[in-house]
Length: 162
Image 1 (cartoon, helix red, strand yellow):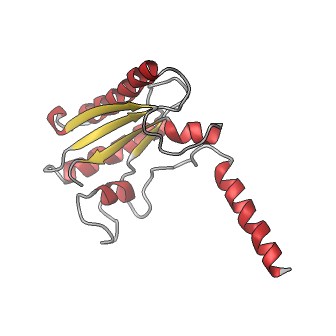
Image 2: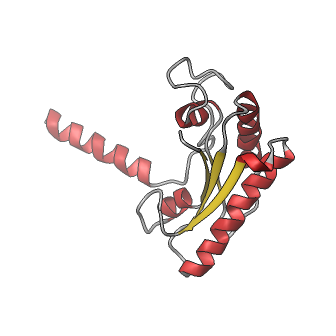
């Protein structure tokens, strides 16, 4: 009986995790804010960026506009990048699997460029930011449902060499 209930509970958790778009605040700080990863990660590392500023901006279907939540994440990223002026980053543009390879490569590039443009507008030198589009070629999650699609419509800021 206990084993059966544990199995049902585990199945419910899996379904709940798979049944929705990225939660509000996805990519948001895990703890207190800029520079407060609590010493868990090397300063200026990819893990530090993800924990203290958020490393991803999600997009609506077939869009490259930055949402207000995305703007907030990019504001934190710019503050983090100002704290680590030696760090350069690459913005990866990703898409879900719908559409042609060529279309998604172009859309991924528009997404990566939109993220870069916001960071540059917030005072980060353009020379510190590269962009690349992976289109639909490197999915973040595998899944042909809206939850999977939502996770794959993203711009990810990656620390070069980190």
